[in-house]
Image (cartoon, rainbow, N blue to C red; front, top):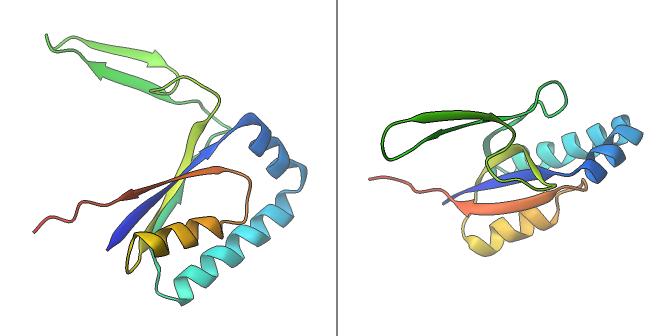
Length: 115
């Protein structure tokens, strides 16, 4: 089964990462390497959270479209990226998330696999 491991950053987590980017990158790459070697990593991407902020596009029931600067949901946490995990069950997805080596918040979501 597949799970999306969604990464949310905060100003504080970005500051800790920037303070020692080399250590962050090494820990991150080691974690990714272990998942890939175990056949648990099915994909993923990081988002550029420093160069340009998010834009939200909403379409109302009447068809009007609004475009605003900022994330869909306001607050301190912003979407930083995601991984697609291939796991045997929900418990394994949680264990992999618990081993994430950097100071972001993670959300796990099962991926709907169509027939």
